Each structure stands twice: as C-alpha cells, then as structure tokens.
Figure 1 (cartoon, rainbow, N blue to C red):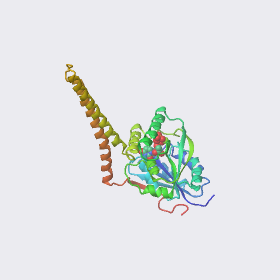
Figure 2 (cartoon, rainbow, N blue to C red):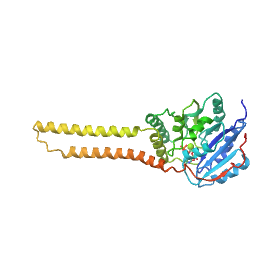
Figure 3 (cartoon, helix red, strand yellow):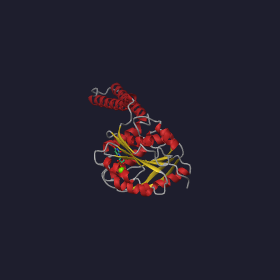
Figure 4 (cartoon, rainbow, N blue to C red):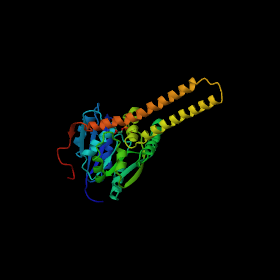
Amino acid sequence: MASDELHSIVVPMYNEEHVVGLFFERLVAALADVPSYEIIVVDDGSSDRTWELLLAARERIPQLRLIRFSRNFGHQTAITAGIDAARGETVTVIDADLQDPPELIPDMIERWRDGADVVLAVRKARRGESVFKRATARVFYRLVRRLAAIDLPVDAGDFRLMSRRAIDALISMRERNRYVRGMVAWVGFRRDAVEYERDPRAAGTTKYPLGKMLRLAMDGIVSFSLRPLQLSAALGALAALLGFGVLVYAIFERLAGHDVLPGWTSLMVAILFMGGVQLLSLAVLGEYVGRIYEEVKGRPLYVVSERAGFEESAPGD
Ligand code: UDP
Ligand code: MG
C-alpha cells in the first residue's frame, strides 16, 4: 500500500451532540490503517453542545480540524466549507449520524488507488427509516435523474470520496444553490462505487425535516435543468389547444342549430384552466428568476465564526 499521502474526511454536523462521541470512536477505529488523514468537521450553527464536544474531542484526536458557522447555512453549504478547507489527496464526505459506515472509507481509498476519481457509496438497502422517507427518497432520485440533464447516480447520497482534481473542479463552482451530488456528477471523471446497507441514525433525530427535503429536491431539479420551464410551456400549449377545441365545438353546435346558451360552464372551465396554467408557469419562471437574483448578489456562501486546528500544519505536510 502506497505511501503517506493525506486523506481528508469532511463531516457536516448540525445539533449532533448525541452522536459526536460515538461517531469519532467509529471513524478513528475505521481509519486505523490509513497512515495520514485529517478530519474536518463543519459545525453548521448548532444550538446544542456540539461545538463544545468538538473542541473537547480535539484533545484526543490531533487530526481534527474544526470550522464553526455563524448560523445554520444548511447541509450542502457545510459540505462545501469542509471541501474548501480540505488539503488531502482525496476528500471523503460523510454524515455524522453513522448512517454512512466509516468502515467503508479504506475500501473507497483502494478504489481511488485503482484509478477512480469519484467513489460513490451506493445504498443497497435502507434500514430503520420510515416508509415515507424511503418512498420519497426513491421518487426523488428518479425524478431528479429524469429532469436533470446530467448523469446523476441513483441512491447515492453525499457519502463519497473524490480525488484532488475532482475536488479542485468542485471548488471552482461557486454557485449559491448547491446540490453537491449533482455538481460532482457534472464535474465528470471516472466513477466507481461501493455498496452498503444504510443503517438507522445512531442517535438523535433527523436534521432534514420535510421542508428542507423539499428545498433540496427543488435545488436538485432546478439547478441542473431547464426542463420545468419547457414543461410549463408545454402546459400552456395544451391549455390553448383545449380552449381552441371548445371554441370549435361551440361553433359546430351553433351551426347545427342547437339552441345552446353560450356556456357559462365551459367559459368558467376555460378561464380557470387558463388562469391555473398561467399561475403555474409564472411560479416556475419565478423560481428561476429568484435563483438568478440570489446568484447576482454574489454573497459569500457561508460565514465562519470560529476555527480550530488550522494554525499548525496538518499531519503529512
Ligand atoms: N446537517 C447539517 N446542516 C443541516 C442539516 C443537517 O450540517 O442544516 C448534517 C447533519 O448533522 C448530518 C447530515 O447533515 O451529519 C445529514 O443529516 P441527517 O442525518 O439529519 O439527514 P437524514 O439522514 O435524516 O436525511
Ligand atoms: Mg442521517
């Protein structure tokens, strides 16, 4: 096994006081045979004791480097900050709740040695997640894949290893609406995958309530595809066609001498349908315009309030 290049592990944490200890125990054990690594934890504005526990953990784990956000910026942004700070030849992103088994990391590094630039960890099965979560996740991955114009792998979350050149390409993408797995797919390079069974969360509760999940789904679809705009155009065309059909029907009825009271019903249907289609199309358009506005403001992606472990040089330097 080749030398002592540095491997970075990036971990986003938001209110994870119940898993911090467990997580490091398993991660450090899993990395026992990796000669040189750094663990970069991004505290995404936790309001519980996560940060204190992280600082304390630095006493035991010298490879630990910490970034604390000034507020909650969201999972994808936390991953971004970790990736920005990583200095390794490979960077592996992993959730803190032990749903992603750290024991997979040495395997993933092996795949990288064999020449892969992106090593995905693909979920073969999900244990202990609600039927609702599993069903929505299933639909979500397939929908995004359908709508997005990129080759997005199904059933792979953010647990993945990336090579330095893939990471550098990712770092150069500073867009605000971040859907990291889509961006990684966009970057390209040679992909490989390891399979695993997804365990239930080790402790604590999910930090992805329905609202955040929907937001992520929107990001996934809208950031990578103009298809919703095309769909709304298609819907508009359909409505116009329908309106025209009703018109033709009305004329025929008139010519046939049927005594039709120019229909209040059909009129209402047409108005409501057209109105609905227009509002929907406007909303789709608005979604994109809103995103353009966000981008144009050019704000930084995140604000850091504290760092620890960045003073001295990393192991392996
Ligand atoms: N997370 C984060 N910021 C957020 C929400 C989540 O950094 O705003 C982290 C969280 O601490 C965890 C990972 O993202 O390490 C995945 O979150 P979670 O396990 O709650 O999501 P789920 O697995 O339920 O989809
Ligand atoms: Mg989880």
